[in-house]
Image (cartoon, rainbow, N blue to C red):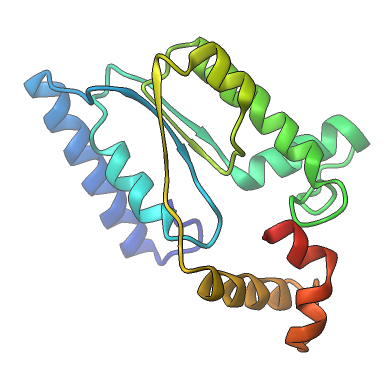
Length: 177
């Protein structure tokens, strides 16, 4: 869910999810397939994930692999530091957070979670062991628009300067590609 959305917007979004899940619970309906939503950053996935959450009855699990929480956890595991920037996926230790997320993905799949959602990469291991049980879903965006959005986010975070050419040549841009 949009972490920084205004209170009323967050409340409205949560109410829609609860309403959908309640309806599915009371009618006994559920999604046809277990699903993994590979949420690509800056591609509009939050709205899709919330719509997907609303299809899962309360008696089925939803596994959320949270971006900020996994960055913090990877920082603690690898560097004994509770800091979301130590293992940020756009920086040099980013692979450590992706490795943790893959482990969490496998744990949720082994637990038969109905819907798993997060900023996870495609996993050959997950496909090999659970591919017959799960459908994989993602949402992509126009690559130029996504690149501009990534650049602006990196600028706000102080990771890059204002020069678009310098951004395109940066390690940050390569990791976000």
